[in-house]
Amino acid sequence: MYRQGAQAYQQTTKVVESPRERESALLMKAAAGLQKIKDEWDTSTSQELNAALNFNRKLWTIFMSAVTQEDSPLPREVRQNIANLGMFVMNQTRELLYEVTPEPKHLDVLVQLNRQIAAGLRGM
Image (cartoon, rainbow, N blue to C red; front, side):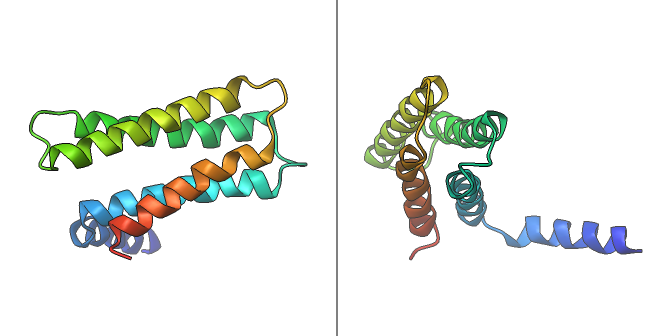
């Protein structure tokens, strides 16, 4: 019975949630994962850091792929800005993944970027 209710809720959420709301929620999820690693730096493992960075990287890879498609409805300038931000995220992620001793403060830029883009998608 509980499972059916949860499935019904998920189906309704998919119908009600706009693509912008979904993108915003995913960016906030990625930011929260990175923030958690930063907040718990002394007890976080490198596997947890890698998982959070890889989730964020995959998300931005999807965004970059979407905006570089010819049929993207976004204006060219917006598409270019998103692609540039995506490349910045990729570079920051690469640096964090390959640093011998990464520092928690280096996650700040990724967390803030995701939060700001998410807020913009929500129209805040």
